[in-house]
Image 1: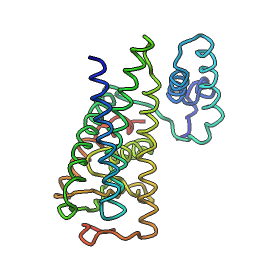
Image 2: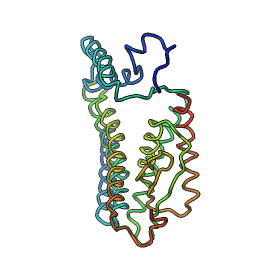
Image 3: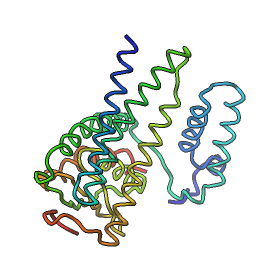
Length: 172
Length: 104
């Protein structure tokens, strides 16, 4: 998506406001300080780096519904804790009880950042690792450590993770 | 009191990291082994990081936020490396368990 003609002049000089904000935050966290010097230096870096690398970021990144995103992050953090306990139990069980399997998920989400976040989330949560994305970005291959019901697994992932990510990123 | 909480967190972290490593050792095929390090270790490292953040926040009477950054980078890099390894394994057709469902 190229910035359209009606987009204001400042877009040219600040192509990715969100990325800049994140960079600034990371710089301040790296230095663990709020000193004025670092505030300024971080702001300059956060402005220059996205400007110089903007050709690597052709898509505009914008967040709709930050509330949904916050809730999503909460759900994922909780699921990570649960996933660890579940996987720990599976690992300690004898191997022959495990039913590993591959699952193909038909993606509804189209935004590239949304897809990568979804793949990341799948790898961090209960017994699943995302393995491959089809060339047309419409199917995600997922490996499960212990899959008892294929359809149930697909529905869970679509309901819990894809739906909220789609709401946040699709509308760009 | 603080020390008990810290010790608890570090113990939990150590246990989960250990279980992740056991998984890496005992699970039967490459794809299943990937599950150990990507998950069992996130909570393991996570609790150790929380313990570290708490300890330095109380010791220096200033909030220590480096750990937030470590967590962030860990959550970004762990799944990406797992994804790339799985992709590479699929590409060279690494052996998988006989009873794996829906082999690609």
